[in-house]
Image (cartoon, rainbow, N blue to C red; front, side, top):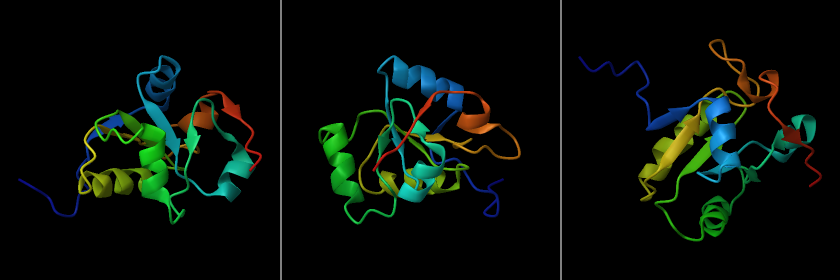
Length: 127
């Protein structure tokens, strides 16, 4: 039975390790949607594009990063997976097809360590 109180997955969910491997192989575009302040504090995943979810030109910048191809595989990462999951659901309503939620995020959650604690590579963000 469908439970309206339990969040339903928005689509594909990927671990930080799988996301790192896929971006390294060129199989997807990884987008860090956190804020510039968060990027400054922790750095950003190696190989990731930075487009803050707070950017008023978010959709235009996403179109630019994907070359306007809404079928390209794009994975989103935030701090803990909450914003990325919401974004994936929202973008499906705008015609995006191949979206992935990196659900652990940069900082991890109760069920997974996240990008940083997994020891995956980060690069400094200099603005």
